[in-house]
Length: 332
Ligand SMILES: Cc1cc2nc3c(=O)[nH]c(=O)nc-3n(C[C@H](O)[C@H](O)[C@H](O)COP(=O)(O)O)c2cc1C
Image (cartoon, rainbow, N blue to C red; front, side, top):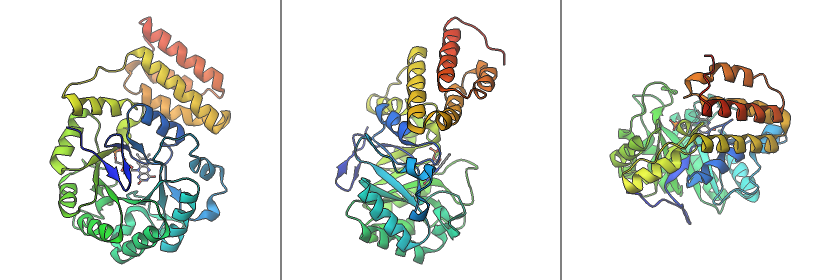
């Protein structure tokens, strides 16, 4: 049971999307997830204020060279005109879908309410949606939470507003802004949104296994899923879920050799994308995620995190996996 997911003129190869995660879904990670089966990968948010785009961080976020289509770029901010300008400029840089961030729990971006805090001000939400849709030819999507707290789950209201404004698809994280990342995501509100709009709806939150993916799709009737933390250190989750949805059977866990290959390729791409100094630092958190399920990796990770050199990082990963294959036990 694999729904077909469309966003504007784009029919996605499949309905599984990599959720935008600042500091995680950079170009190397997005490309890796696409290779591992994701149908789309949304970029990390770009702050709407273009005066801030000269920083190295912003420049790497604006880089989409060689990324498979369609390229979706998320913008974040609280000012309709600034967001409209950011959308226009990013479309000029090659974004084929513009995604508006009303999902992140950050209080403010550039001293203005932004992310999920916007959901409290429905008039402003309408202004933002209309301004951004008007500014670009490409489809605009909206990512939001279920509301701002458990007494105010207004995602269904905003969803209707979004559809009327010309938004082409919605992604909903099954938590309120007040929840932050606490508790479990709920999917009833997402099901309600789905029943109220005709545009595609993507469900998000705590999808970390094929069974959960199927459960959330069935419960919400959603057109697809966004997967965030479940893909950290497990980018093959996309092909696992796809296989399960298509066949009802589980794919085997990737063998150790393949995990090593994926990880070393990922490191090489981080080193080349960011340059050695920054690449080495960013690689540490990914390695931590890849190895978090290995009981024996704690001591190794401590040593790995002290390495400052790209080649040394690569060698040390190779040694770690050689040790695992030889049945070596790493001191915990
Ligand atoms: C480290 C991190 C960074 C995130 N950054 C963004 C972001 O830039 N924009 C956004 O809309 N959501 C962001 N999110 C929220 C995710 O897109 C997603 O909605 C949330 O993690 C729930 O999905 P999950 O349970 O599959 O991780 C971020 C989440 C994490 C963990």
